[in-house]
Length: 143
Image (cartoon, rainbow, N blue to C red; front, side):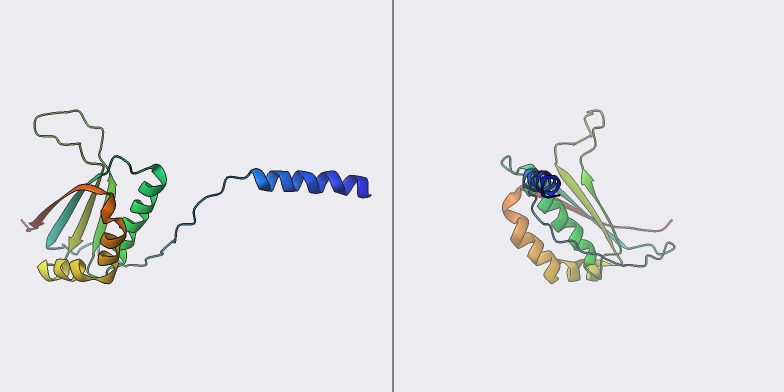
């Protein structure tokens, strides 16, 4: 019996020791109910260019930090992703690494977001990774 268990134990230990070690990223679950008929009044678009030395693991930490911003109560809708590979044209700028789009009810909601602890923590923890950041804010109007 021992002759059967010993090879099995060695196999299990070898398998475990060969597994890749990964950094644990804190997962934040955000529950929001979005009113599909509501029209937010302000769109806040942020373009990020990351430093050249940001590796894949640092980029993943940056992405997780961005998604935490959705937990700020005044954020009504949020979209985030990398630049699209659309064809180059005179009016197209795909030079950024990521874009973040946030919708707020109004300017007051935007201002609350700017000073909220989640946002300030994100800037403190991730700001050193930014080569450049550009923001475009616009009011949304109904037809």
